Amino acid sequence: MMALGSPIVLGVESSCDETGFGLVSDGTLLGQGLASSASQHADFGGVVPEIAARAHLEAVVPTLRIALEDADVDLADVSHVAVTSGPGLATAVHVGLAAAKSIAWALDKPLYGVHHLAGHAAADTLEHGPLPERSIVLIVSGGHTSILAVGDLVRDPIEHLGDTLDDAAGEAFDKVSRLLGLGYPGGPAISRAAVDGDPAAFSFPRAMLRPKDAPFTFSFSGLKTAVARTVETLERAGEPVPVADIAASFEQAVVDVLVKKSLRAVRERNLDTLVIVGGVAANARLRAVAQKKCDAEGIELRIPSPRLCTDNGAMIAAVGDLLVRSGAAPSGLGIAADPSAVLHGAQLPLLR
Image (cartoon, rainbow, N blue to C red):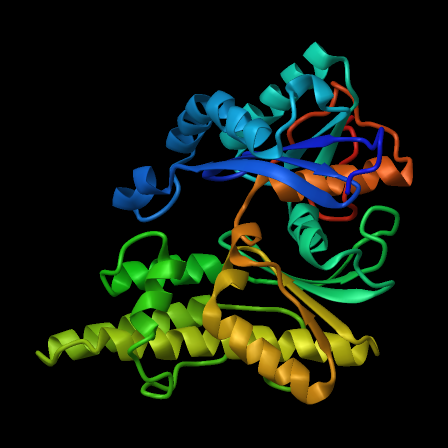
């Protein structure tokens, strides 16, 4: 039950190919609207920034209306506005930021510029409540693969333990899906194909797992190349390409590395909670393997439902809600887009 007079935070997300609006109050998701331009990018095998920006422009007003109707609130009920101001595709981020500024200015309400990746971490709080005092967060998506040490999401600095050296996991899914003729976006396509495959059929590399490798750093380009060489070798020999087996073996290789490195971080920091978020967190094999490994080690695993794993406005509203309740000062209308923003905290500073 929402407390009388509780802030209602509108979140706006447009960093890639999803246009999202969400409304959150006191940690509770009131409603959201989401539009995707993924189908418009399918012929190109990846997101085209100009197409994404035009799609955001077309989707902003109807998606906002859907979110307000879903939450059963009026725009005038909004008390604060939060928006992704980075990182992301520059043209896409600008559209959402402009929309959020327009709303905040028209309503004369405070505006918060937030970091997209902090939004992914905050998405879990909408289902499982506040994060523990300390936790390890694995963010795994189309553009990012990172292990973070997180305390209070909006009050404490966020510590990067490791990132990917090349392709993000989701990007590797897209590229391998294209190699196998499965289409875009690659994550769902690979997962569907892998259901009927043998994850042990091909021994694909698990990179960065040797003793001297950086313990929390990822690399997926070699795995992608190994899949490409396997497909090429089979085709040159005139043999059929076992798409399901390759998809399952590739998926298992990605999952093995993600889970092993994440649990290593939990152990080394003497913590007991692992949070997995981002678009790839919707992957059924990742969820199952992570749950099994965490159960075996007595580690609590928190993963939001798939609808909150993809980019969405609800997660941005969740960060805004936390910022408002923490007493953080608003960013103001002077906040600028920062497409290459590094994650140090949930709220992005004003660029000078």
